[in-house]
Image 1 (cartoon, helix red, strand yellow):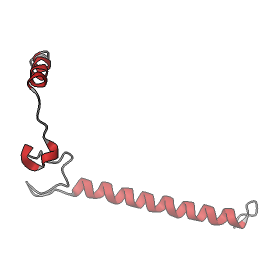
Image 2: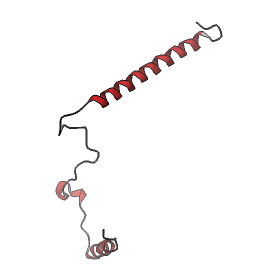
Image 3: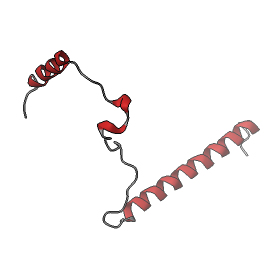
Image 4: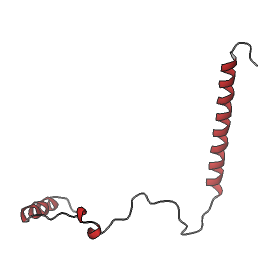
Length: 84
């Protein structure tokens, strides 16, 4: 094809061009779909980023009994937070 480059370089160039073409087509397909896709109201749009909070009774390892001194220290810490 090109007299100044080796056969291996020609193969690499062909692979690179095919990958670039596939990327451009994929990007175009994604943008076209995003532009013209209008889901129904209330349709599920994927997974939630933050899972739902479980209750304290979900598992015994998820709760800790605090002593009276720890509860008082925590209450003092909470009182130092600014109220908004």
